[in-house]
Length: 504
Image 1: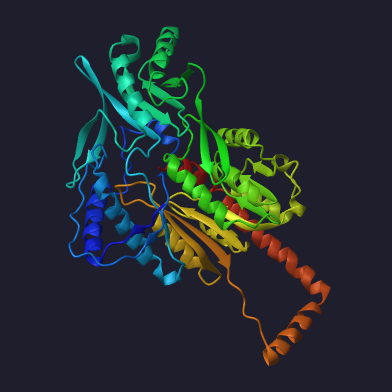
Image 2 (image 1 turned 45 degrees about the vertical axis):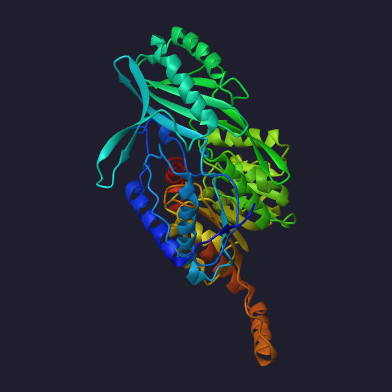
């Protein structure tokens, strides 16, 4: 893909001004179809679609006009996309300049139809029924936005919106007390729709939902018969099943991925492919060592990186996510991954102490040779215990959905690690949000020479001659301190796992 050329400082000022206007409209608020439901609260976090490096170019003579659009993204101007991306790139470059990173590799999104998932409130007005979103204007006032089409969502999602609205509006059983509709599509053409009600669902509803499936199957972009799921308080009714099958093109791989309803998956399939390809490239050549991944979800990164390592150990607290991950590994013939259904703190404690646990049966802790750690934390960044864990690895892949907390975490380890690769993934076009990836490598310690080298050699010999009794006295004290730290960390494990799934 051709490189995106950066404009002059004048144009960048205009683009940055546009970015600030957009940020003021968005804040850090999730654009929602309404109050969070069990379905919408389960998970979200990232997205985008099509890669390209960003390089400097000659000055432009005229400043670009500030882009304007609806905060709910119901109307966009794709011609303004490149200017907004330029502003994001400059912002991230400036923010991380103190770390002297390598050139920033920026991955460009599709300007339209990049989002695979969306949720809408269903509004009833007389004989009419339509989809609704809520947004805040520049004064902070909330307003309703009718959504008949959604240009940032996939073509298939837009087709399903129209077909569902027309059919449900004319079907009393499906329309009565319906208040939310969630759409989930894939790059492979599979899809599912969740309808959320303020009523109990019976067999008559299920029969009507089966007819709706037939209607949705007529969508031009659909490759399968879309799934339909009904939800109400304490009830979930699947017409057939509650999942879709995605297929991701990552380098030479074609990765199949089960995505379960109400569980987290990447909203932007195209940018997900770019992220996985980048992570594979930075970890290439690691087949003689092992990878530890914290909170792997449905195994999105795990299955892409597994061929690069001898063994992969992935932790995850969600039972449904662990089940989906294992199915995905089986679908793709991946046999060198062990998924531990436990918090990262629990696993780290067992690994340090070589302590057997029922959930680690079949894993030889003593044989693990971890060289690389993969972390993909929520917006709050890494907690102090995980930052400490970083220091035990030679290499770290850090995927961040918040540059501010990434910057803060890097400050804590800047004396021990250097950034070897640096990437920006434009997950959310037309907003100020960006995703970053950094590949960290332990700094080489200076090698002593001549007199200093001799002194170092003497010191090393003296350390080796330290009485065994003194070493044995120190070891229990160190283990006790580590155990106390791990016990304190364990209490926060579940909370962080929930936060990770509750973010977009």
